[in-house]
Image (cartoon, rainbow, N blue to C red):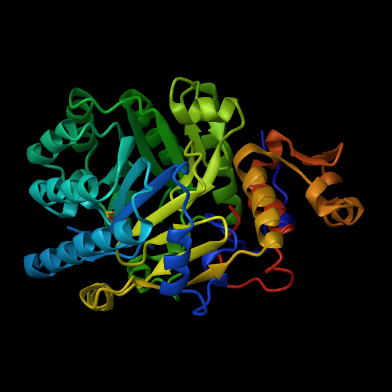
Length: 440
Ligand code: SF4
């Protein structure tokens, strides 16, 4: 059972889906750097693609994603045309050296577009890139899932599906503006399994308005009856100053920090006892799932999609706001869909920001990723660890962390503090707290 040390969770910290984090991006990096990074991809490199669909049929009040209402067909079609244009442009810059092993579709909700539109997207990707029997994954919104979409999932052999669930409690669903009954999710899962989906993920949340430990447990119990292969149990980050749609949420009924901690701890215990493998600090996977196997072999990675078994160091993001990662650069596309379309219409790469990763950034990035994904990291590349032992003393003294043979090792009880521990290796975050979310 985790022990609560509020003093260790006071400092807001990044989620570290990249290092340096998006808060450290600047405008000195853009299309020229993306072009250079694409040209440097070697024929032997494995590539992962991510395609962003920034639309949803209904917008949830808690959502921090770059997404808008899919209520204008013309706007959606214009976006898809730009996305097709970007696919061709990026593939040309990459040359013929692509060996695409993964394709992820996210957003937003990819099923905000029509099933036919999605088939056309797949056609463009397979025409433009050399697909090496890639693992395909997609995020789906149960509220807009149709039989046509089920057919296309089967036809495209998409094996990994992630569903936004958050909570099965009707009162919590009403409080977050996302009403989707258990039956709806249950029927969808039956259909997806019949369509050949072998890895199903549920996104769940704790710390939601009106949520209690008891209602979280009810959601987890209902979840187990549906047997997802993976579960992500995130803490809700309430930052209405940055995410205006969150102003619709009644912040007087949000759980406090201790209640959030207890929910995370109870959820963790419950899922471990149910046979899930803990992945990083907020993901869980069955031992039979590729992510569960990566957890057991300590080969979990972390990227913009969260914890993953994807081992590639090259992720090419396509679409408005999509982020590409290369060893030496992280590059982000224009976030505004209209401006994104204009750039592509001018035959320009849409990257407008990012960060150059120095050797020191890369070294620190590996340590941060290893701490978060696998609970231990080799500190040898940093030289002497004596200074680190001093900085980590609050965690070492509480029995959460050890330094053994130049390796920092986190105990299971350190999971809720993993982001704070990782932040001690963040070169950009010595003093500032920035505008990040609570550490749990
Ligand atoms: S469906 Fe997903 S991406 Fe769309 S608004 Fe809701 S949480 Fe955000």
